[in-house]
Length: 589
Image (cartoon, rainbow, N blue to C red; front, side, top):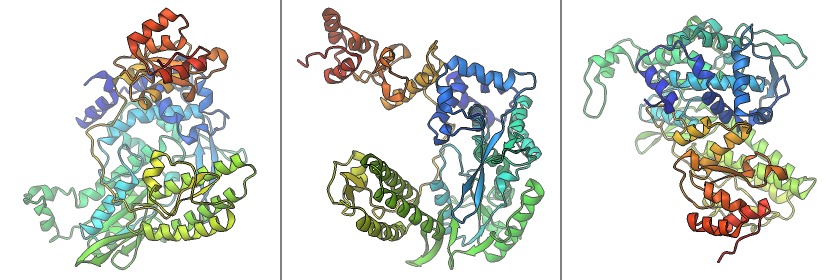
């Protein structure tokens, strides 16, 4: 296994049942730290400050060497060892009027958590259940809905147990979690010690008071979703061992169509037929009969309390017959109905979410109607369009999305027509993405030339099952070499933006179209030179070959002619860059 693929190597070693006792050198390697910076830089939360008032922008000004040295010092350079700074507590309002506590670690602690996550994730992925979909590589809500609908429609499992764990993230047992990580093969005591320090980091309340947690993992921490999956992985496998992966199954043959004869034999016993579909702490259990479902509800409730020290909400946990009533899962309400002699899935946006989304869209339309300036109005339109596309992308998995979107459209269009002056059916040319999505819609409207996306113009998308891969994805060889390339006094933002540009330019020179075959040929050019106030921002950088780079800066006619013959650039693109650095443009002829 090549060392360039170290994360895949971890995956393969875990697959072979190896134990890991020396992971911290990998966690603190420059390559891993720079990759961690890259992974958290574009997150919206990276611009939110913790108790130290710092954001990702403060780290971006430093060189890769400085960032690496700082992370290593924080983690292992002091006498007392790694001690995370207090986590900032913030209350997030929920639609029902209550609030959800969010813990915001300081930016350096978030970077360290990402470093740990990148190393732990490939090891854990091997042993996670195939029916767990929350916050995992190559997994999504779509996959969870596809699995749930398959159980209902193809599996004829029409009794669903809707479980609700009381304050899951606030009640994770620290000692139990450490034992679970040890069982997964993570046996580096130094690394486990760092995880425990993260879990026990003090929480700074809004009134300034410090609280020291004895259980739970803060929502908002980068590593928290992975730790949650480690905790509930034991539940996944316990449920599967009761039926789907029961040893009895493997004592019987498999039919030509893939059916396991063991299941037929097991149905004649007192074993409970149960299947799980889980997304983080939200999970559903599917059963064939009401009696089995009632017994399973009791068994799992007891198991969660005894094994994981987690309590189930009796008010919210219930058995639903989906032939008669809808079952809610991940913002959808799903049931089965008779069609052509079969039981077919029928799904909508859940009532609660439909009400919430309607309220949010109407509020945003009213913001468009009351702008202070024309520029501000455009910003509000863009925000509205972003909301519409986000809702459509998520909820188009519902079979009856057109019905629900139609309800939203009628409510929204009434306000748009009545409140927005200057609304019309013509405006600017749609972008390729907009044209594919809304180009054929008669519902699209324009304000100040800008399109207002029609919430009602959306088609159902059949949910797809998870795409299984043999290993976790990582960056390719040239990207890894770019990560490792010494940059001396350059900022980490400059270093990371080169990799983003490499992907955006599809590994080719922006001026000549030539494919980069090695890092030596890649020159990262500042469109506006730093001497003239240019920055290391993504928008101010572009990747070109060495010859194209010389052409951008060359002023000698002989030098220009020589390189024009050698690399044959796109003259228009070259002239744009020459003009920005203050050089004369070249003749297109």
